[in-house]
Length: 92
Image (cartoon, rainbow, N blue to C red; front, side, top):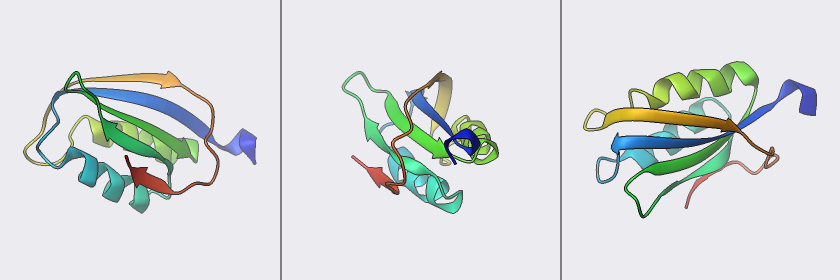
């Protein structure tokens, strides 16, 4: 099963706090059946871990560039990370 999963840690920058980005991320990740979490960072960025089917992770990464309507994303930095396992998706 681990061969069929991908896990990434993502840092999203731009106008991504105070625009419902975390709530939107929880909704979008849930629709794709992903595991992981999302949180605001002190530097104004949003950080998330997405894990699941590689195609679903890729689709989520594409969606992160858009975000909710009020967001203005200027960067999405992606790095591979350890799979958190089947934990569901949560806002931290």
